Length: 451
Image (tube, rainbow, N blue to C red; front, side, top):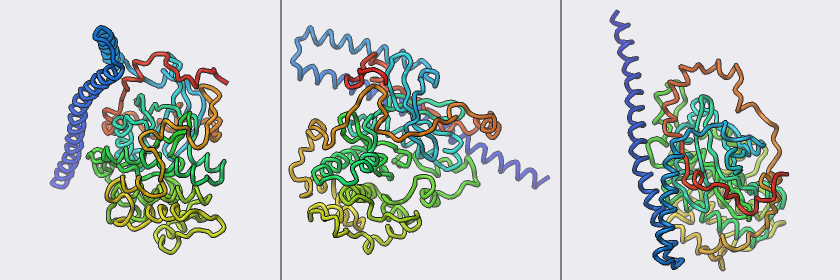
């Protein structure tokens, strides 16, 4: 009886801990949401006032504009209360596939706007200890209202999946461009690396480390400019972004340290990963600058510096980068380019950007770059967009049944089990002001109709 009592007490203790954590997450999210909503509303009002001052509007014109803005804010509060779900979107085509789900081109039924819908399986998030990462991804997409980060308009969930509704960038990604071009000129490389520096810095300023900077995650908009995407391995400063925060969900899960070795199978080859990330001594935002150096090398040489037949061999080369990072004589590049690559791919404490980002921006390789207006100039390579749903810059993928769970999937995860684990996805729902209040505002480059 004593053994049974002790076991029951221990069991209750674990259950109580989980309930306490659940309550903490709920309260923390509730109050942080209230503060964020108030701050966002204030920022929108300040932005309106600044724009009106710049336009030199008369007092009566300002009054009308403020009245229109107030109506939009009221409409936003009303629309935020409406439930958004899968049934509000029409799936058009699969445009990407990863370890935990896929990306689809979708069209919102009521507005006709086209988006990229990222679908993530909840069961995989839990099993692979990705809950903290997906929370960080969702949070950074909410916070990063920047030209350099792919914009998220909505997020929601159902029993099986999480959904992120993001802007569709028809230019494809940098990897597809590199495969098409083989190598880039130093002028084109300067343009794309400079834009990526600004993109990475924009998330560093929010307190996030991307950890998965690679050509696949550098998307190109309709004009060919860079936007950073895929924050699935991103880590932040909040407790809810840490893997160990969710440890009590399943005590049989592997330790936090093991997830770096899992990256071989879940992320792909470690070509772009900084050596310190593979070690157990900790690392910081400088790991993103190493990755950019590897990408710059690939742009100019035609392949990444640590490229190998197997992930294990690539890992070995990365860890021995002092001997393996070499420049082939048959592909000559300038000394300025070579020097910057070596400044990116160096010891952590001596890496460029360790002091501040200006150290990178003022490097001789970027001579002549106008960072303040770089996004306004024509891109190094022109992107041709034919229609609202042009996916010609994306790879072809077969359709899947991720949106229609099979009987096996449902039986493997009982409703009680799903409900029990669902608390870790509390407050995942999000609706952006521009998404709900912009009716029929389809970008001009997308008005040529469907193919």
